Image 1: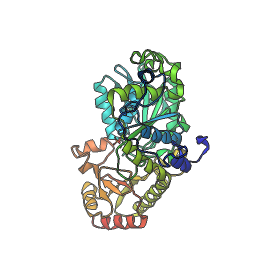
Image 2: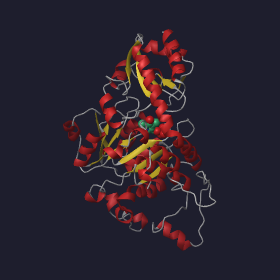
Image 3: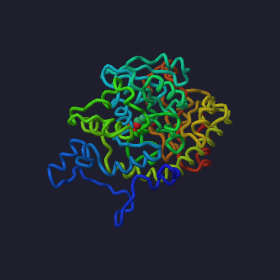
Image 4: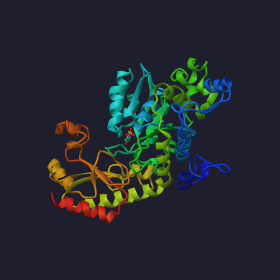
Length: 428
Ligand SMILES: *Cc1c(COP(=O)(O)O)cnc(C)c1O
């Protein structure tokens, strides 16, 4: 029933339907543990024979209600909340790739995810081949090995702002018998639903637009339920063969394609590694989700107006925003995000690094932050902050030139924001 409803309605109503006399708003179940009358009843939970709550390190009702809302928004069959976007991406990948395996990932991804894959997962024995997000099908095919278990990319990359050709990546991943995992943080399901283009698993840093007010770090994993693990039992033994730690349960048999991935991720990875979202944070996240469609509209409209203003300003050297006609990703954005993309743009001033520093110092409304994607406009000059240890040559190679300014357009009035940018640019 939920699938036929529009995004605005799902953002308000999905995930929780109170009965007579129950709270109208999603309640915060602030409890670590849950009571049972007999050991036998509780034992069934540990054998995965019955579903229910027993300890909030694995599952909590508040988190599950909010996860169910996000699953409905993405059009998935199951979802889980995590303590951060980093945890969501790590769990989504580690649920199917382990020591001795290999993954293919777009090179244009969030710096934290790049480090997770290139350094930390490598230390765990998981190898990676990074591919250019604009690579051809042939180049993408060439990255696969016999032990490749998944492909990973971002709808709109943070901070490179490349747009991924999801359909192409899905097609190639499927031809090699592996799923495509898409981090949909910047577009949100309001602007792009990767499952409709062939993606199999979607992840989010809910810290960004979904929360949208800069109050709670969090993440989410959603499964489309469409990838048939049982066609490749040798590739995905964790899903297709018995798990001794649950008396020989086989996830695909017991929970079907709709539930196997998220159930395994919950009962193995959450059990052993922790990092679930707190019910309090899930409650804040839910408040953010209620207004997400309206906020995304305003973020995108502000970004569009600001990008157009910057493009016309004689002191601006270049502007990158996939909503601008002539942007390298304009056509891909039209295809995958016809109603708008996100509120983040990047640009450079004539005068490079020094000009960027002067400009940032004079901004009054836009604050200097490492954060993006919340209600307050903020900006970052990576060369003097997050990437300051790099030389200019290294910055160019990373696609983050010394002059690059990343601007996350908030929900303020566009005229006020443009006036602020204008006076700061005039100081250069
Ligand atoms: C911020 C971000 C992450 C990491 O999320 P946290 O909630 O900070 O752990 C992952 N992917 C993308 C695209 C992000 O922007």
